[in-house]
Image (cartoon, rainbow, N blue to C red; front, side, top):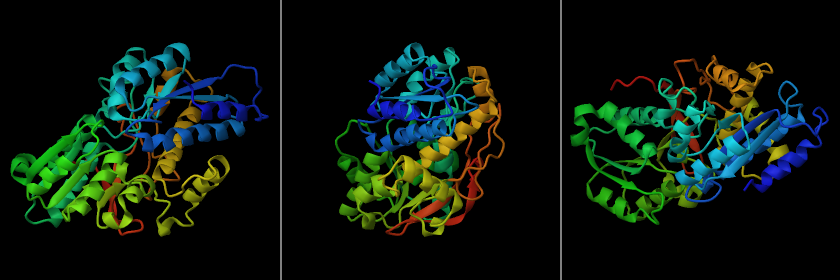
Amino acid sequence: MRLYFLMKSLIAVLCAPAIAWGQPADIRIGNTSAYTGPAAAFAAVPRTEAAFFRMVNDQGGVAGHRIDFISYDDAYSPPKAVEMVRKLVEDDKVSFLFSGLGTATNAAVQKYLNTRKVPQLFVATGADRWGDYQHFPWTMGYQPSYRTEARILMKYMLREVPEVRLAILYQNDDFGKDFLAGAAEILGDRYARIVAAQASYETTDPTIDGQLLALQASGANVLLVAATAKFAALAIKRVHDLDWHPMFLLTGVSSSAASVIGPAGPQNAIGIITTGYMKDPADPAFADDPGLNEWRAFMARYMPGADLREGAYVFAYGVSKVMLQVLRQCEGDFSQEMIMKQAANLHGVENPVLLPGITVSTSPTNYHPVQALQLERWDGSTWVRFGGVIDGTDPSP
């Protein structure tokens, strides 16, 4: 069922003087996300995207065309995602899918969308498969791939820990397995010697206590956690309660101060290392940053009362800005072919919420728009960046 916030969005459009009501929506954008279920912490993303497109409509749309953003709850369930995406394509007649959340859910509809030549743009997951332009030319990712992130974290670990014994906790799907693949690319024939233990979990698991006990028992002095927000928070708290003190490496998708660090306990997370590519609104260095001030003005008007420490709002604003750039480059031709062509024609696009030195670039042979990261460490109140921006495309040790 279409969500209530979408109805509010359409009501808001009635007040936009530049677009006449009564005409069908010119640009129909489809989305599925986890408003409920194990990844519900990320529901802030589609809600912000809906607000962003309300803003675009209030400002006259794109080339005079109104945007109809239609978002459904897939509960982070692949079968539900298939059902909802078919509804979007076959009943709602969307032009393309945008920012669908989740590796397994998007993988479940990837072949269907490519067969029908419906763009599946800026998928909200870092799985490496979203860059496979040869086999899936109608699918494109956005954020740095999980393999890229794993390679960067492994290089850091090898530099900083002389006698490494690594434990890995990962989600049992393409998301988690991408981290294993990225680690293997760096560790090579040392993998079996360095990795003391690895354990997976299912998104339906009530806890991960057993997995963490087994990982601790391995004698590991480094822990890599490739988990979504709920399980990342559980891992941080449980590691603290076990009085275990490994170097803690955490995937950047679950580094939110509001939805992960807060529930886990900010003091329990001190010293955790992650990667970032977006500006952290809680970082004092960005207190008066022009790019984040643009985002803050948007939030004040279109998402009043939202927790401005939550990184999901920043992500949603940034990826929506990139989508808007694609639509503007279409210059009024919003055919599916033109939308895909322009998505693959972004050259060093500046984005107000990306870290300095990181831009968005694509081409017909590059479907990974963002490929750089910076290491960050939690100090008890915020993520502190250290080192420079790292190009994650180099797989060499």
